[in-house]
Image 1 (cartoon, rainbow, N blue to C red):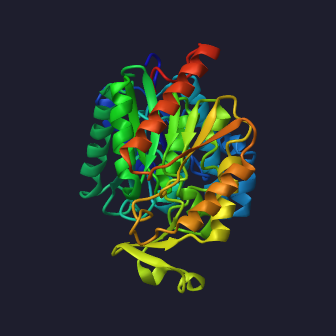
Image 2: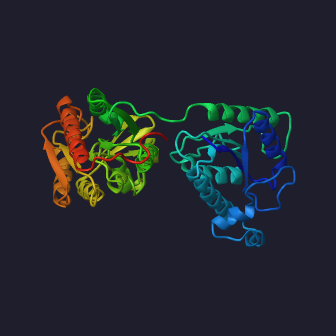
Image 3: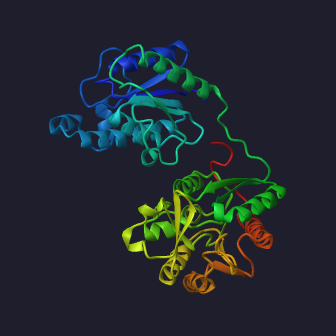
Length: 420
């Protein structure tokens, strides 16, 4: 990318020595560098800084002098993270970001990961961190960030951290030279959501779509997977969505561990691309080990899917609310949205003889979807189980018909589909 460079981001005030060494390692590999200081104290004089901390704070609506006077570390970390994110977003829009690298402890890692949220898929992002072995899923979000353990604190140069910094620089530079454009194959890309309980359906749909010339990207409906799919839809990565597994809505309603948040199932509607939606796995809410199930659910119908996965069967009241929520999220789209109901069961365990097979409870879900569906959302029914091959054929045929009609009505390419 012309005029692009490696962004070196971090708290240069307290960690100037280690960042200076990282900068030297990057320069030794011939890479141009742009430096951003996210530390709220005085700048370390070891190397020039392109974007100073006062500008970072200003981007988040704060004055650096005020942050210093408050001496509120939590506030400072939050402000500098948001300010750095806005600066990175601008640099990305200008085509100036080849890769991003940072280092830090708790505060520095949070700032770095917050800022890296603005860097798109395929652009290398690496953070050498004291927290790399911890669960940073909330800070990582859906981004392809590489976390590298620092082993010792990022507090100064020593014989342990020096080679790790050199390796981090080498790794980032190698990633930065790799081809990052994601080429389209065939007619276009389709996003599809899946779970272990809907694998049969997703595998069959994938094969059918591939035969039709589409590239299929599957996302595991475990919370992070749904968030990632929604984010990439908003980045213009897909031509259509086949949302087979909407179970994350059930976890959002009941407090399960696979919630993707309130924005799940909104991106395709907002972006105006065709989508076919299934109430897949809405018969279940996901928890971890049995002892993690909330006390008020302990007397409910539970099933151990794995030692660390406990499923709770949704009841009639929950199914009615879920049906309402599902179709309300499809309201107002600029492209066709179709809901297809598998009348013989919505998951592997919701089949005849299965532990969650409750046709009457499913019927409540289906009735709510029909009742609350806005006029522009089509609701179809299939006398099949979700994992039956015939149901997959119905889904793919419906999606391809909607895509064809959409292209005929609006024959333009979507932004961002050529490369990321």
